[in-house]
Length: 165
Picture 1 (cartoon, rainbow, N blue to C red):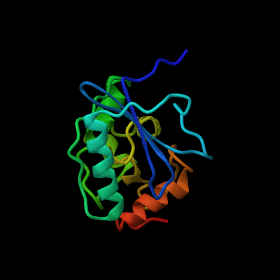
Picture 2 (picture 1 turned 135 degrees about the horizontal axis):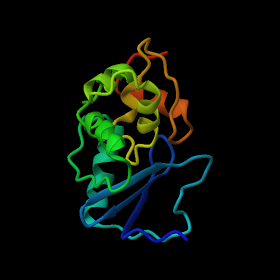
Picture 3 (picture 1 turned 90 degrees about the vertical axis):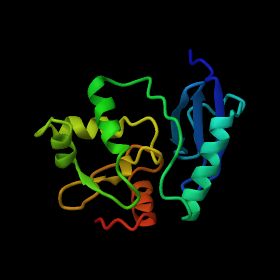
Picture 4 (picture 1 turned 135 degrees about the vertical axis):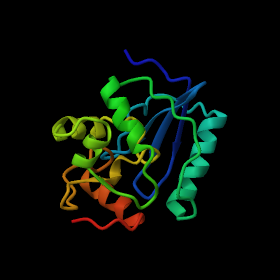
């Protein structure tokens, strides 16, 4: 049985509806609508100040007027390895890109591309923690787990002016 998050907010975006959850320490998750579905659709919204702030910053990001997020993120799930990947992703700025290999090297796990890819895909707070900014060394999109997958990632990359193929 799923427990209701302490705070829940949905908002429209160019990618489809977004659903954010938070606890008292910060944002727990951001989900992008997939085929008309959101993970917590059966629950009523219960906005909090941090979620209202996140909605405002996401609106600004999509409008092109915000290039960085100033929000508390509370990563409660994930392994130490996953959290180290997410921490490195959180340092990437608007329009910056990194390869899976370079990401592995940066966190001291060179040669672990498949594991890096899995950790990137498990990011619970996409967009705010820019997992869309990871590409193959060739600049190719190899996958994306949020929203509609690769088209969602391509939209985010295009929005930030990041070249890809």
